[in-house]
Length: 481
Ligand SMILES: Nc1ncnc2c1ncn2[C@@H]1O[C@H](COP(=O)(O)OP(=O)(O)OP(=O)(O)O)[C@@H](O)[C@H]1O
Image (cartoon, rainbow, N blue to C red; front, side, top):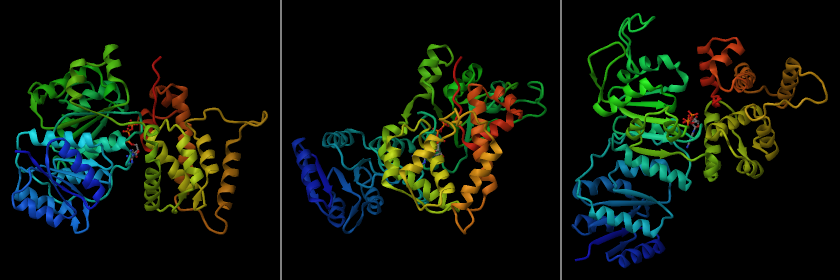
């Protein structure tokens, strides 16, 4: 006997195309335009699988999902929605949906999801997570590329699988790692992040695994490592490509055996930590050059997740820009919008610094311009003057650059742009940041990203430099030479 699929959607066109595709694939189909009828059929024991829209005239399918899971735990429910956000994908998964498909969708894909759901062994009800999720949106963007990420994340939330996130700098790798933790089953445990590129190489092992008293010169007491701090939670290993070989060997052992020894210690310590790694380097290339262990790569790359650069999902730009303006507003900056011209300029731009660069630009626009609507010219001006992208300063004629004079002129213009009003508070910090950012970026560029040399050049302590790089959100690109 043919399997029966219940299709619920208030859009008649969708009901028609979906049921035709399913019937062609050999299924029996029943359609309805509302939740009440869908629930009546389900509670009567009808249907082998349900495909449902989220918003319907008589309610929200997410509210009915727990009821369905309760009365028929084995019945797979596929949720389709036009509200293609991170939260929809996560909610579908949390409420026990078998899968979530963003609209518009490909019918062939829908049919193959249905086939897969019906052929998989029944797992019974998944434990629905407590409904304490905030509706705050951690990830913004509705492009097809981000939809793929959301669906992958929704599936991985329910597992402890090791995930490696690749993507250019500023694409949101750390944010994704946090979302995996915050909405996953370890959300009650700690999230500990460690950036391999920001810690002196010879200290990485002891940072990660801790050390015994006297393990090396300067080790005055037993110290816990990040693994211990992340127990029961998630450890985010950022810039994993920068991990020294010895630390890689220890990490491999953790992944293979679930235990490690602290530096200078003997007794293995069992650990329960989910690993999420990230890199903006090509690990396969590092393997080829003998800088990364191949066996570790395979252990880490259980679930690879590639975050596309912003230029490959430029349709997300308006949503992202709006989001960052709202964030700026919540920090006390005035509300702003972008003109069509501004959006056009931004769409044409390449965004080498990805979402982080956009975020910084929006913050500058919100802080520095009095206009409510930002024009294309302003954006163009800001992008040309981006300290990171224009190392050479345009000097007219042979006039020497007078920094104080320039700042003075800038401030005069800035104040006058507010007319009778004062600029938003926090001016001191903002101006120093504006000066400090290009200064540090220039030092890093001149030393090809070598932080030791850059610290020397600037005459600051290495740790101070590291802190500033972090605080100012400067992306350090190290060139190999
Ligand atoms: N999809 C997104 N929605 C909202 N904010 C985002 C998104 N992606 C990135 N961001 C923001 O952009 C900034 C950079 O993101 P993040 O630090 O996660 O990038 P990254 O890939 O880890 O960068 P790096 O490789 O340089 O460490 C952060 O402030 C983050 O909140």
